Length: 117
Image (cartoon, rainbow, N blue to C red; front, side, top):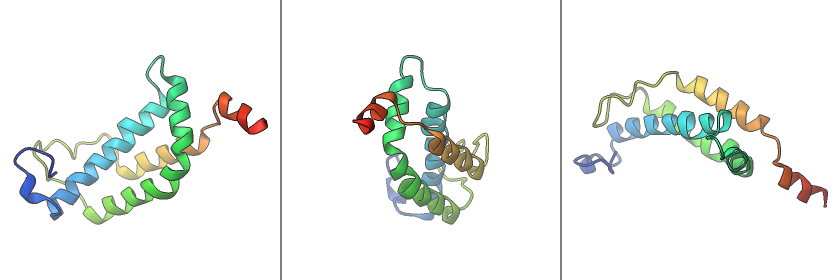
């Protein structure tokens, strides 16, 4: 929240942690899951390669870290827009879908060829 204009004083506060948890949830849903499930036209191979290369880090490090921070922060009504807590689904649903999508990723054709050599 500290990067939002006028909210700098809240850096590290509980309000800031709650707001950051909403941003993490949105990142998991919109920037990660949706790009795996339905990549933008023309970027299918790039998205597949990117997430395939990052999946171990995401599954072992980033997602558990976000999950723990979101649980600890609790429900959010913090933030400058009061809209950030209106996610279309609960974080547990998003996490489950994202983890499954990452685990189901197959190596891109170029990576498979390199592994065979």
